[in-house]
Image 1 (cartoon, rainbow, N blue to C red):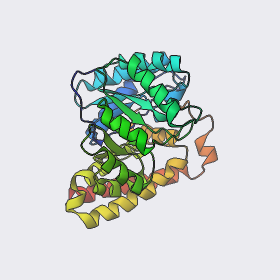
Image 2: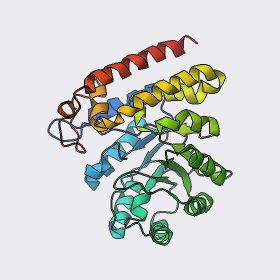
Image 3: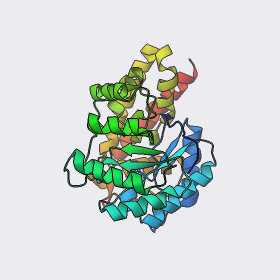
Image 4: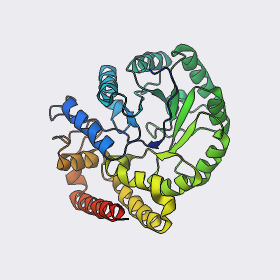
Length: 312
């Protein structure tokens, strides 16, 4: 881990894990995916997260992927990693200690594993305090309200503790609620902890409210359009409102087997060859008959928007 505290903000793609058809990790494809993110406006990368299918990776694979991403990026942008998938406290210590060794800029803790039995703040603090005592003290930390196995939102009390502790530098907010995001921005003002919204439906409103970035799943389709909103949206409010509508409607397709949908998109782009997923055990095209047609419209809309924004 780095000795200085990084600023994790801007557009932060939640990284896919490309697999070969036989199920092994496609590292050349992963390298091309990293380059695609960087070429399309990524300010940081979130590796070994839910989009990476981390719950379906062995610890050895999680560590190897995290290290590969860090080494491939080579300091061009910050990299944060999670790999936090266990409920058992001893297993959490082991996996987080291993992930801490990959050289990333921050280690991200998943909130539902800090309170796996939904017992509340006392259980949350017990797990968190144990991890804080056992993990290397120089490692910057983040929090992720991952919706699987259940969405465990932080209470204001818990967020305030983490924000003022000093070690926490980001929260991937999955509240999907603008008033909650606004309250959290006020609560964490003046602390190292940045609120990063992951919900496309409120992305533009959250940016206008002061959220310094976006780390939702559609960073795997058009991160550059979110980057334009963040950097240029306030100077072109009417255009930003139109773009926001497109981005919100496009993101509804997340329900069409998101992991496979994103991989079909990158297969078309030539980023990697296989759409193999470990998180999906069904044929997405058989279940969602219009999937390719929907993706066609998203891609066409994305290209029209890229051309329009380039002409401004």
